Image (cartoon, rainbow over all chains, first blue to last red):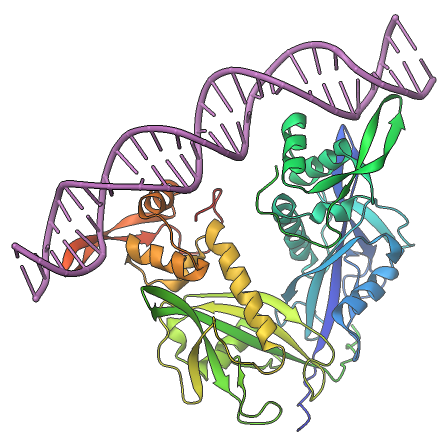
Length: 222
Length: 222
DNA sequence: CCAAAAGTGTTGGCGTTACACCCATGC
DNA sequence: GCATGGGTGTAACGCCAACACTTTTGG
């Protein structure tokens, strides 16, 4: 077994950490950005990321990079998006970026130098990070309808109204309450949980996702 | 701008080149495989691939790797699949594989040491190439229904029966002729072309895809 | 004339949409 | 008792699946 010729090339991972926060009547998508402290693009916003280490797997590198910008324990879903490999995407040299999508129920606890920004009016981002962000949103929108990815944007238990608000926030349009409930129940996306959520109104039944891991649906929602 | 620390790590590209060939009544999916001449996995079948060069973009590397196993000019569609990065996926050292999917209208002209193999009963493959092949098939099946990817598996012009055979071959089930025609016409997937295809039967109207580049459909086919 | 594939409509059932009011609680 | 969200049914419509025969050519 001959050793491989190693080229002068680096692999980075970058993460689009997405969540939702109240805005107006509903929820708006936000992503985690970090202000760059060094050149190139010093002072610009960028996605959390870092260079892959020699014996580290991709997901490990993503978690390491994310942990510099927020606490990891809130991450409920992590998947690979795509690899961006244009030779001059990084002015310092050849760096491929294996981009990832992370989902969290709530945007909280951004570290110093990091912040949650609205996707809708994101500032210019360093490198090709705008393209990566766009890919993340597109992926999430697509998967929402035919999978249970939404579980990454909610806690263990939630009311159907909360679930609907997540769908509306990501899809950017309103859905009919009765039809939405019929659909998510009929496709078996969620099951009733035990408790109720209380507030200044009638208590709301809690639900949980039927499957813990990502599952594709036969039928579409929304 | 400080130079990056370059780690001892290589990036490969691997390609699943897919096509269809007659089998029984219909068409069966086949992929291009190459017999390995060196260790590791000497003598096993593997996917065409190669190490990314320093100033080469990913698609360029894919084309270079493919051109060793077949003529490039038949490739009608090329897209990135996913990046496989387990630290020990290659026994020689750390090599990430950015895998790709290529589509061709017909499986022809495999170079020496390469061959078109049926996906359905593929032999054991080197490295994690079986997983890459599975990802390619899954991607193609999914996209067939809600996009015009099928154009990668057909020539410029084709009859509706040929188009239907492509769908049936990839999906692995038969479709109703009348419903299929209604659907592909109503969603505007194809337009009538000028000629007809002749044979020992009534001449068949030729069609072409409406869009040259990959387009997502509002509605599903099949 | 025969073989082969092209081409063409209708119907029944099901799923999707559109739509408005009563209910249970907290304060 | 009032405000707030929770929770529920039905009717019209459109889409999809199932189904068989006639047409046109080559040989």
